[in-house]
Length: 331
Image 1 (spheres, rainbow, N blue to C red):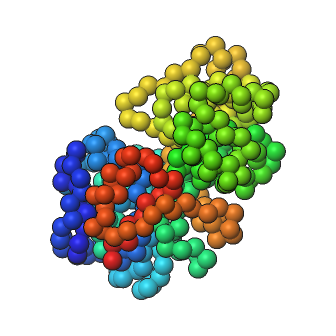
Image 2: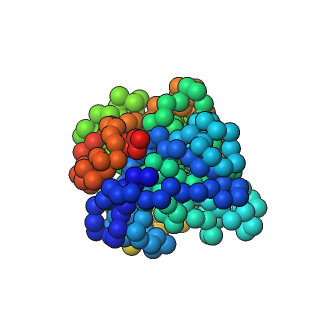
């Protein structure tokens, strides 16, 4: 099969031929139809994820059709990324997203930037007919992550004022999710173009990072929930400054090795709640797909190409000028 292989950190993926994978007991062979690329792929290319070894077939936002193994042949499926151990205290509570022994497609295991990939049967998620291939591919990361951050970790509800720091893929999908949950939304970003997109998606306010003081006019008491998706230390500090007393900051963006800080007096005296949020659970995956099938969230797709486009797509991703996911169709 053809695949895009990252041979070592700091190099672009190279298109090469690999043996077709063979599913083992309890596994499914998937013919890959669509794979989303995101900012995490840049971290992988730069060698910033310590659990990863190279060479590596990247691609963790995967959708395809069952082609063999333990599954109904031809079924349209998306792949839930973490393959959890099933035996630890976190798995016992359904927190498969933070299982410390989990391996992930496109990280510790071969990913979907190939014609075929193997996944554990319990990790495949049926794709509703109303959801396109491209939408399904990006859902279990670009939509799942802000879905958990806002609905589960942030407990966003009707009437809440939600500020989203960072208007990238997670942030712009977060706008739609927060609105679907009944909230009012403001977005902070450095890029006016992303703020315009956020406005088209329903955000009431778009604020350039240098002008964050204007958020006080929109939410005089502060935001009920702030979702920090930029991963930048300045973004975290801003999040803790604009949340209301007793409010919640949820962080789902990250930059390995960077330190996030805030005013410790404010954290204590205003009883702020700070929560991390990583991906989502298997139950969250079903919830995210349901929002899309119901038309409440539309995954943002910037451009679609083939395997041969992967090196150029990676460079475009690093430039950061596109709005929405770059999607690869390997076949």
